[in-house]
Image 1 (spheres, one colour):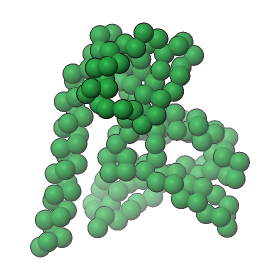
Image 2 (image 1 turned 60 degrees about the vertical axis):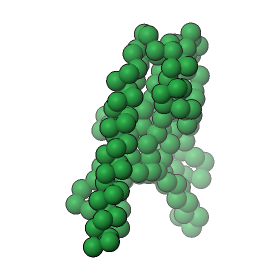
Image 3 (image 1 turned 180 degrees about the vertical axis):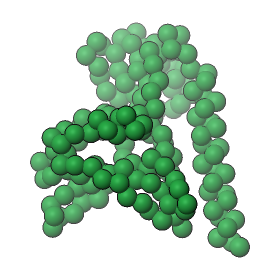
Length: 160
């Protein structure tokens, strides 16, 4: 019984996080919202990248428990240009052999976890991209010792 209650509490807290994100994101307006407003509503970004046009992209990952990663693009004046949830099937399909760790981080955001397999040798990053029948659905990106993508895979993590 206690296990069931813990599972229910975990589910409710995740739903609360999604509802919170939805509420906050609805308050942000591309072309209007400022850098200061974004920080006040979303907090500090997990990562910031400089864009070629002088703007910036801020990462707000909801990993390891969530299934979202938002990239907010600001123009050179610090005004919100756009919001993108990057953990989509289309973005996952863009991962190609030879891409660098930096390219993957910018494409998909912070991974849920990083596993190093010294005997292979290989490093695997994963992102939680779904939940089904008591399992987390994970998307994995495999890197060689030079930090280049060698391929992708999918796996499941049993909850509990």
